[in-house]
Image (cartoon, rainbow, N blue to C red):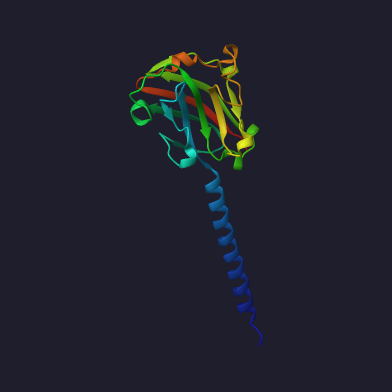
Length: 192
């Protein structure tokens, strides 16, 4: 059985179109899945009575934000409300952990392809001093294979060393005693 010239041409065009459609669908799904990252503020006071997002492995989050990894720099603002976190009625003596995690970012990017800058902190609406040169960021806890890009603002336990010595403190942990809100704003750049 011989196919006519028109039939051969029609089959070839149909095959080519189906490959383009299938190929584009696969690329779109992969690209969109890789470009959105759940982002959240981690906080714990020194007595571990006031905490937020310290056990995200269980899938519970306080005020997460989804960041879309787009070319260029974007502004991000995140606020923890005392009324929404663990220990809302407890008093804070000072902070032990204060970080921002961009979840699963290291599955798509290398640490040098993400940069956080212009970090500002507000406690109950009042800005507090931030020593930008003391902040740490990157894939700080690779040994846990958590794929999180972390901005370490203050962490007595962290790999960035921001809570190791007073001389290395990017922020004063005594000034993080928020009664209503703890706000973090920054610029984030994805380079790819």
